Image (cartoon, rainbow, N blue to C red; front, side, top):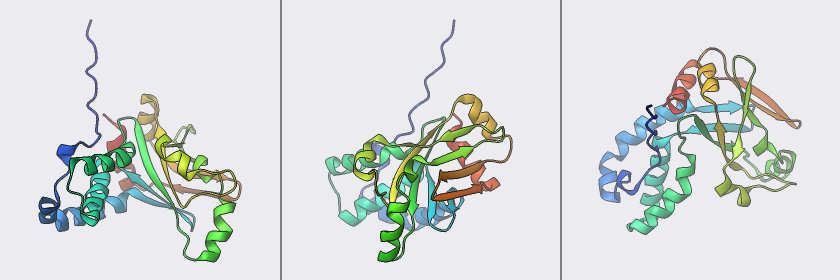
Length: 203
């Protein structure tokens, strides 16, 4: 009897993060490449909500930029950043997304953050056969970003797919939907976005 080999974790480690001087040498090329990647991974849901589907590279960019801005030079400091951002690196069978509520004025903040309370539990992916996969809140971030009467402008979501749902994802049109009564929106994934996300979902 043979047993399946466990899939190696995709999470980032200290060895993946370059120090500030080394990162500076690759920064221009890396950021240019990541702008193209992020464009394929970003979707708009209506006029107020954007989802950015994250992966190992988008999170490495985030960590490297934080280290650069904050001038972090110790392993302990880098480990803190890894602890904060590694939950958003999807393992096989997962998608991870940052949800941004795009509000450009104080009046919009006062109007919409209460209206959108609960939006963080209202995002789902509809597969070609009609199955849906609802995003769950990243537990590490939930306590600080979730309240009953008002939402935050940023949330971190994980979508967990069964192997059958992963294969169904590849077969046809896929929608991302918000089913919050005060903000009903849906958008169909472009082929380039689907291809990007399949690299997250598949082993």
